[in-house]
Image (cartoon, rainbow, N blue to C red; front, side):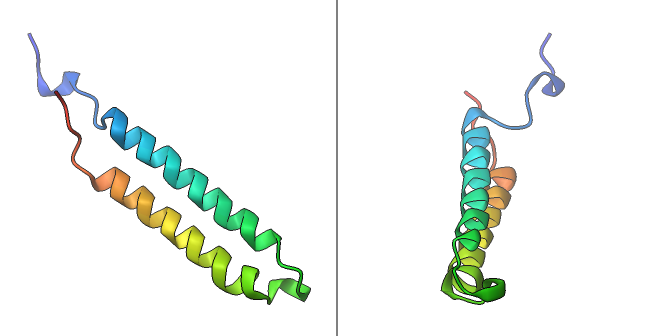
Length: 71
């Protein structure tokens, strides 16, 4: 007897994409720490780091909302 409750909510591809998103978010925060300007007002702290971090959150949302491919 197989019901829809036996299936996991995400597939392996979803979990892999989530891990990639977490890695991108952490990379964005790490890039923000490389800023040499005072109080993080340089290119890394204000421009590049936040863009990479937002990209990571977009990857996370896409991984969660993506329909799982069960075989």
